[in-house]
Image (cartoon, rainbow, N blue to C red; front, top):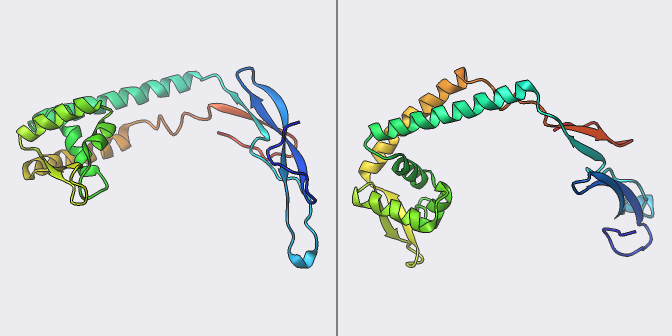
Length: 209
């Protein structure tokens, strides 16, 4: 039988635990070697079983009709907000992609500004696509490129004054819209309920996901 610790020195023992074995969801017993300690005044180490989070079997639950309805409401709300956001961006003289670019630059945690690669990651774009978007935004004077002070090989992005003002107005509107959605949008995410049923083994505390 395999163990997760090596050696059989004094004070160690093996504790069985159950683990799901692949798609068949068959259970198998493995052993983990554990050791518990007492203070020096209490003498030699003692042996005790340490509970493991593997002491439960997770069984997927079939989604209920209510879950499907809430998932639909969630997706519909997300799409409605996304379409509203695109309309707001165009009303401010920006494309939706430019709005997302400005937000990626402004929301970056480093005050020096993000790199092209970091912006590509934020927007889920390939590097060359991000470069093209940045080029067009730079032509319209929404952003600017600067060299990193410590490493001149690194190019960082910063908002122009005009880009910052447009983003500030758009972001204020988005915050208000999100507050509105917080009141009217159903709690589709929080109230979806558990998606798995937990079957505990003897001696394991009840758990839910």
